[in-house]
Amino acid sequence: MSGTPTLQSLPGEILLVIHSLLSPASRLTFSMSCKRLYVSYFEKVPARKLTITWRPREFYRDDATVWMVDQSQVHEYMRARELCGFKSKKLYCGACKFPHPPLFFHPKYLDKHPDERICVQRIKGFWVEPGNCFAYSDLDVYRGVLQLDKMHSPRSLSLGWYDSGPSRHGSVLWSYYDILSLPKDKYISKTQIIKILSGFDLPTCPHVRLGDPMITGLHNGLPQQYIEELLDPHNPPLFDPTDIRAKCGFPGCRTSFRWTAHTSVDNPRWKTVYLHIFRDVRVNASVDPAWAAQLMLADETLLTQHWNDCFRWKTEMLAIEKERYINQARSGADAERISREAELRQRENMVDFLFHPRRSAHYPGLVRTLVASADKGQTRNKNGPSNLDKVETLDQNTGQHSSLWAPPTTPIVTSERIRGISLKNLPDETVAVFPRPVSNTLYTPLFTADELKVYYTKRG
Image (cartoon, rainbow, N blue to C red; front, side, top):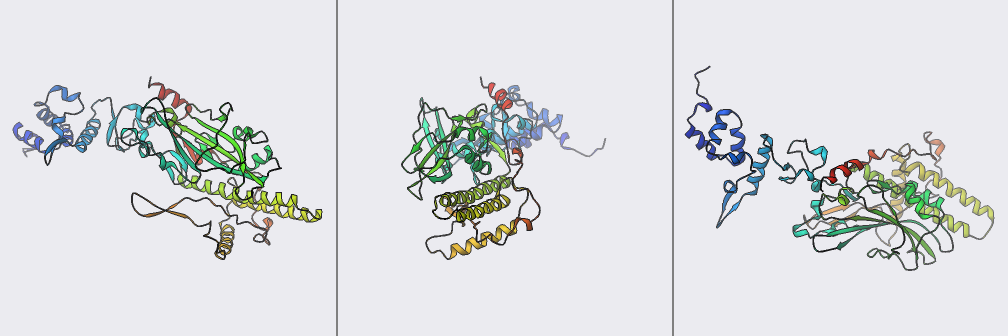
């Protein structure tokens, strides 16, 4: 061996001085580097040091007038303990910078590095709409007061409720979508419902989408409740408690669905059929199955594009359906109605070809041309701002303006704009048949049914 002095050859008293100059976490990792440093550290430390998580006296700091525990020192020490291989009943969370029981982690995160491990309450997986995604920690504040207003959007409203004391609280997120407007003397058929929802196939929860047979079969030809008043976006309709709603069958998921028909906003002689979605979330804790079942891991870019496609397609199709009802009620020669119906079918084919969420190809150049034509038309309209513009809001935390996601509300495919454009001149693609994409390309539930059953059974 070389005669060069090393750190291990220093006297024990000098090593103790070095230990005293280090933070608790650095002191622990330094002592675990070799046997000599390990003995020099633990020869003055009680044996219980190996089993207890931390000793408060080591983490006190002088804060002007009082002594208080330095939580950052505690967090670093708990992380160092786990990295050094000490056994503990709690695991370190890299997002919270704090240890939690294993129950607070998804099974796939248990074996990850402490810095990469994320607890369930820090996973942003509760999607309301694009740009509106939350973790439990975003809503939960001190003493159980929930910031439920964060989940509000123009199409969703959070309804808080409390039950059996302050320890039992939760929220129902109510979302609604207009599916079709038609004259009050007309009846909407199940075929029309399936046609609209096949393209307006939004995810309602991680397990159900609007185009699923469970929702389309719920309608049964007629809305189960007709209300003469306009739909109030701040108050959901009162439903018959004896009415059985369709519900998601996933374990722990409490999402339910309901149809109603209200007087149309645009025309009092028309009615609008709405689909209501109620996501009942018992936000008592991040480990509550009702909350965990609502979480999903999504590709934000693909999911946002899917929402844009669904709303654009629905906007165009509802405009076509409205013109179709007007054409059917028009008096005059049958030839004019037949000619108009042919134009509407041509528009339907163009809308399917360009915007259907399950279209087989994309034509951004043609879409940009149609959008530019619509923008020019709205520029000449002095009645208000363009519906194609993004909505800006003021962030109360940063004081800066940020753009919110705004769905398309103005149709851009008209008979005049597509005149001269023939589908035959575009690449040969399927228009009528669209294979439904695999769900996991957009999102996947955080928990599978088996994981949720096994994992949360441990709570008992």
